[in-house]
Length: 90
Image 1 (cartoon, rainbow, N blue to C red):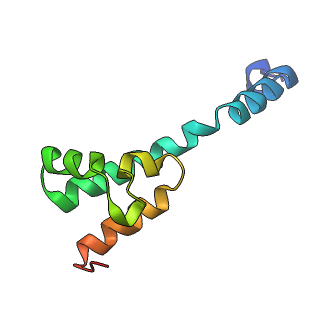
Image 2: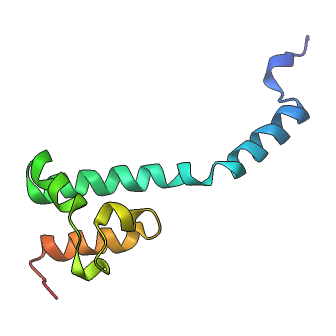
């Protein structure tokens, strides 16, 4: 039987793909940001209200906006949305 050369991955491509993946670490946060934005939309009920909350400085996030905090700590923003969902205000 003939071997299909397209089923194997050349080693050089594999190494390139791995190094490219490591150099684009911020793209791993994109799904988290999208999930948080979707959660904000669900929590506030409209794009305008969600955007207002995402861009407004929040004292519980150190005076930064949720969008600013998402860059370094998306879990903190998600936790704040969960508190709002459950009417827990600190």
